Length: 380
Image 1 (cartoon, rainbow, N blue to C red):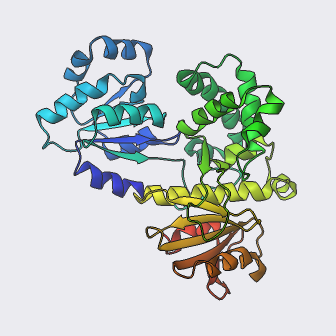
Image 2: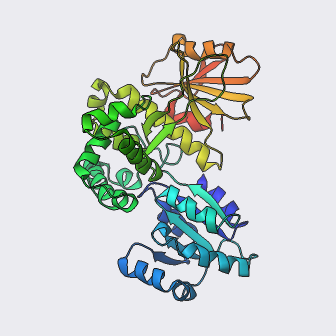
């Protein structure tokens, strides 16, 4: 799905930038689209040192189109690439850039490449892209390729991620505490973010928690879903909800390894809700759409798991996530209650469940569908 958007951008922009979590398939995607393009991995210390000391010389030796992988390691290149683009702006699709740290990358892009680069986010596979994706496996390509060694892969991913990406973004003296922080976050999936509640058991300050959360967010490990900003005439909760971007990684950190363990786990509902959040986000980003993904909760306890703004605040989609395979009309009650105070908007509503049915009416104005069939619903 994202391939079509990338091709469209490559025909109109001199450069494209693909961001997203490490090992989500960014390099594989670009090399598939451009198998004959020059390729430079900007992680080898010698290559990085050379690119920093002689950026013109490095770029002079390349033949466009060229893939510059993990360009956040040499942000100095942005200015030189911009100069080459400006010298011949009619040449499109020449610079193919990837990076795993969105915030530092976007700072370089906004300062040097504004108007010259199309930016995309690539996340691990969605169910729409790969039927092998499940709650326990998640969507990382290497896990789907070898599910029998998923536990080894996730364990190694956490270790290498901590040692490489975390230390590249910030100086953290005690990685063991950061590992505990990640495990604690996994146990808070689907909950409203409470930084004080996270700081206390770790013995760190709230500003430290804020900093650590930003690291996980800019490296694509967690999703912070904001509350919907419209009032609906109610006093609203303004705290974001927390999810892991990959349900398989979250399940691994919670010690949930098998389907039997999942059915008995107290985290089953939260993990499923996180899977739905991730699938919704991937479906929108892969179609070149804004995220526009929110949740709703007021101070009287009325809560709807997800709201998608599909029409500038005038058209909304309400979604409830239910980990059960069987759903009932009562599951739609929160959405029905919220719809009654949203009569001036075009509302569609769905209960997304763990069953196998494609889509059917659950009650008037509300449909139910399995998470695997989310992409077939007309909400994107």
